[in-house]
Length: 307
Image 1 (spheres, one colour):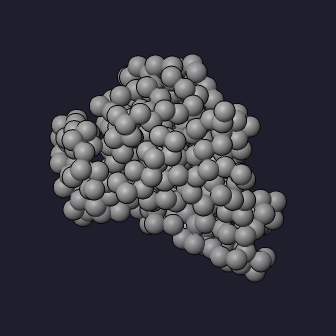
Image 2 (cartoon, helix red, strand yellow; image 1 turned 30 degrees about the vertical axis):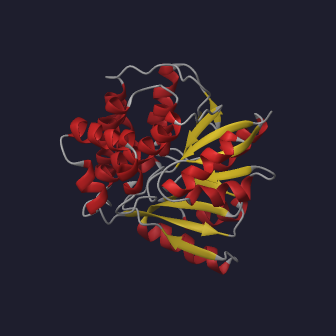
Image 3 (tube, one colour; image 1 turned 90 degrees about the vertical axis):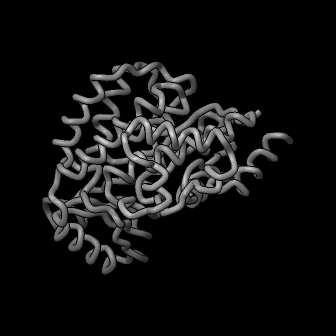
């Protein structure tokens, strides 16, 4: 019998109105939004469904966590079970909530502060991120060495897609060299800071202080972490991984491969959008991929469960 993995998206998946069909259809989804509003002291409904401040990192992160958790709660109440979980960057916190490491009320203020720390670590307009499509890691590494300081490989999403991150001029220089070297495409990401680089050290240090204030439980199922592409049970070690994650490369392709090695043959992407679907398709073969980004799609996930 194969295993099932739940995957949660990260920053960049947000859009105005995400999760509204779940909110309107299921009382348990509405209850998650109401709990988020109560926890944070502002209307999560206005933020997510209005969308005016949704792209500001300190609001984006709790908004995605809330939406992903609302969708998860709906499917959990309908019998969803899973064997392993992971998330892309911010999505790791949704995975930890699903695995029982911390509850939503604890996670929401934490990710709001995480977003704030990440934004404050580097002044707006100084840094950014760019997805390089169609260039191997070794070739990209050489280009980064040629440019010198200020740019790093930040996300290893899937074969043929690596995100670079750093100071704008260095990121631009590498992306131009990458196109000359045969990259199919270089896409600037709608993120206003150089996430997952050593420039985020101040954010990592500030986040550690916040993590030290909360109590994490051991996960009820394995959580595959971005920093190591492996599981970890010890709460103190998990806190250290969450701190390091802010300024370390995201090993998402390796995480998917690790789950496949563990016997996962069904991946369910749970949260706004379906950005992870393509990463799964290009990273692991002969697996079933389901998305639960809309009520209609979630019902198809339910039907699969019932068979």
